Each structure stands twice: as C-alpha cells, then as structure tokens.
Image 1: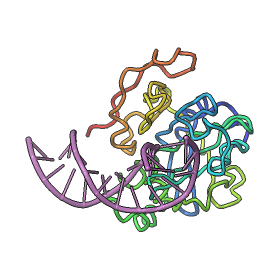
Image 2 (image 1 turned 90 degrees about the vertical axis):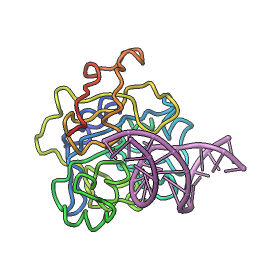
Image 3 (image 1 turned 45 degrees about the vertical axis):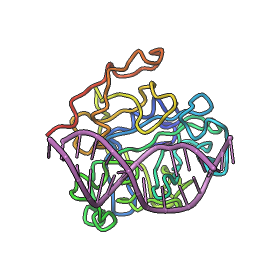
Image 4 (image 1 turned 120 degrees about the horizontal axis):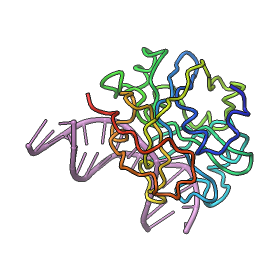
Length: 217
DNA sequence: CTTTGGATCGTCT
DNA sequence: GACGATCCAAAGG
C-alpha cells in the first residue's frame, strides 16, 4: 500500500478500499462497506463549505485519517483521498473483524454478537479504539499505530452499490459500496439498495446496478 | 425482525 | 439555536 494508491478521487478510491485491512494495534478488520465524500462539489460532505478547524484533515495529503465527532457521542473514521487541498475522503462504514476480537468485545460492551462489533461507522471506531486523538494520523506510515494494510485481497468484482446512508443532501448519488453477502455490512445499510444507477449522470465507473443480496440469513 | 424515540454536544448559522 | 456521515433500548409482530 503506497500513498499513490489513494491519490485518486474518493469515488474511485472507495470501492477499491473494499477488502483492505484497517489495523490499530493488535485489533484489525477487513473493510466491507464504504462511502465516498467529495469536496466543494458535494453538499453532503463536511468539506462542502470549505476548510474549517473541524474538517482540516480532509484537505491534507491522501492516506491520512479524518476522525470526526457526531451526535454528541460518536466518532467516525475516514481515509483522506484525492489531491492535497481538495477535501475528499472515504468513510469506513463497516469491517469484518479479523484480529483482536477479544479486545474489541471489551471495548464494545454493547455488542450483542461478534457481528455487532464493527457493522457501523461509529461501532468500528469503538471496537478499534479510535477517537478524535487519532485525527490526522498517517495510515501509510503508521505514525500513530493505526494503519491501512493490503494483504493482497482483491476488491469484489461486483460490489453492492447504492445511495449513502444518514444524509439529507445529495441523497441520490450512489456513492456507497459494500461487499455483497458479507454479514458485517451495517444492518440498515445493506437493505437500502434501491436501483439507482442513472440517478447521477452516470459519469462514474460504477460497478453496474445495485447488487442486492447482502443482508438476510 | 421492524419501528420508534431518546441520548448528547461540537460545530456552524 | 439548530442540526447532525449514529447507536441502542424498548416495544410490537
């Protein structure tokens, strides 16, 4: 994994990140659900109105970790994408836990099962022990322990694809991708897969229409 | 399994 | 002063 891999736009980078590993200390999980957020052209993005104290990390070099606080109690993690100064990032929405499960359970007492450890953007931050103190960390050099790892696993050929979750602006952009059939995809998320596709000009090298089929059983 | 409402506070208007 | 890139417990099928 080099920084060059992440310098593309968030919309290209997001599906590419599926299958990569996010590791913090002895805890690690494979990325199975992501969302792309743009800069000044994306009304749903924190970077939409330009640089502020809160979102400054989004404008840094690709490969940095943008951690933000929301709803008065939750932390969420993003991988900064694109050229420096543009403000694009990929929100990590779910992981498939692969290492340090026991520690994760200790950090996430509310989890009723192992599937509940990392199946949500704020949940996976709890499980990995990610908080605002890690905002700005470099995921390539691992300067603050947390890092992105490529173990050779390829992204799915046909990932699930649909609208982003939990936003009220630019709701029609199909900028969420997930590993179809992975049970760790965020609960509500895997089901919201309306046939989108032509919702936004179709300029993006998407992956064909929404691949339903996750969820269930 | 699904739906509903409460929690809780930093950030920006 | 309003609103979240959310989660969880409770209650009903």
